[in-house]
Length: 55
Image (cartoon, rainbow, N blue to C red; front, side, top):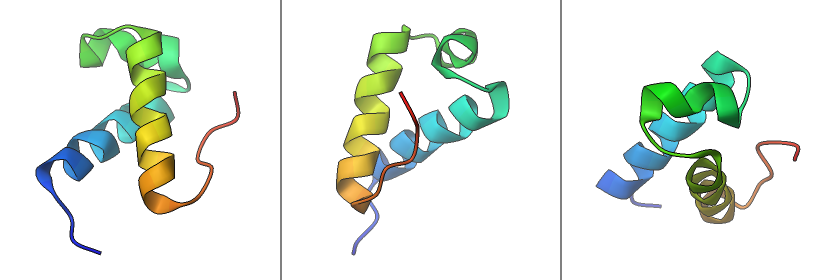
């Protein structure tokens, strides 16, 4: 698997969600809404083939 720049962006979003304890709490740091964060997490989960967050 090759890691791209977009993969790093998705991992950065996941990192913020974990550190802040949720999508809503991470939105201030990331500057995007919870739905955008959810879309990024979904993309990362699909890329990795695993579920990362309970919704």
